[in-house]
Image (tube, rainbow, N blue to C red; front, side, top):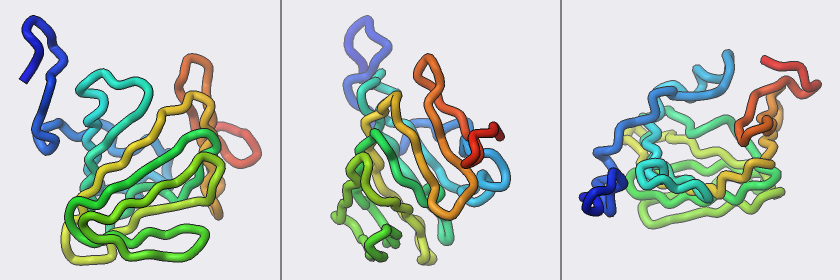
Length: 161
């Protein structure tokens, strides 16, 4: 469905949105850790720029991302199907359909893992802050902003990947 004469739809079926063409922006050896995830950028379909919304599908054994913390981005997840294990600095939690969790900018790290034999489906929402620095506890990688609103991955000492 789209507005008359507009290419921006007013409503869509989320599962019909094509998955991201690039499964991960992580450099190796990190990219292979999130292999198999299916991220569908729902917010992009509507031209949203202030926040992003993704429909994420994780196969059994899959992970959403490296365990990470945002300096300047709030993040929210909502479980639609399956069972997630949420890993945080405060401990682990099991989340099922209807559960949600939020991560305030400047807070602790988090990661979603599918430790079941079923597909996990959830929404992830973030505010797309251009100043966000993402840290990955225990890993030699950071995501840092670049001029123009992008980001790049660097080692903890600042050298690029």
